[in-house]
Length: 155
Picture 1 (cartoon, one colour):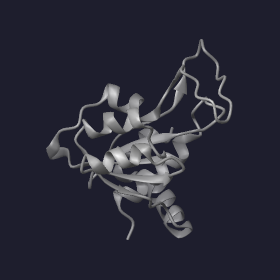
Picture 2 (spheres, rainbow, N blue to C red; picture 1 turned 180 degrees about the vertical axis):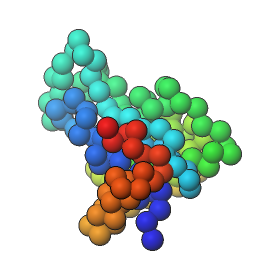
Picture 3 (cartoon, rainbow, N blue to C red; picture 1 turned 120 degrees about the vertical axis):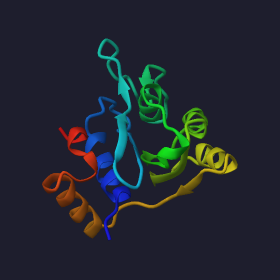
C-alpha cells in the first residue's frame, strides 16, 4: 500500500532536481500520516554560483534540511517524519533533533555521523526508499489524484 511516506519520497526525488548545486542535489521533505508539511532543496544564493567540487564543502550552500527548518515549525502533535535524499550532516542532524521530527527515512547513507546523532537523540532512522513499483504508484497518485497536498511542491 502506498502511504504519504512514499509520496514524500517521490516528491523528494523530483524536487531535488531543482537544486542549483553541482556536487549533490539534496531534498528534504517533512510529512505526517495525512499530508506533506514542508519541502526544500540545498541551494546556493543566486549571487554566489555553485563552486562545489566533489569532496570539498562549499560554505555558501544552504543545506536542504536547514532551508526547511528555518521557515517551518513542527509541533509534537504534527507527528512529523521526514525523508531526505542524502544522509544529513551533523549540523543538520542536530537541527532535525530539535524540530519535533520523530523519524527520518534516508535514500543515500554514505556518511553516518548525522545518522548516529539522530539515533542518539532517539529519532528513528531508516535506510529505506522506493521500490520501482512504489515509485510508479507514488508518481501516479501525486500527479493524478493530488494526494498528500504535494502538487504545490511539484510545480
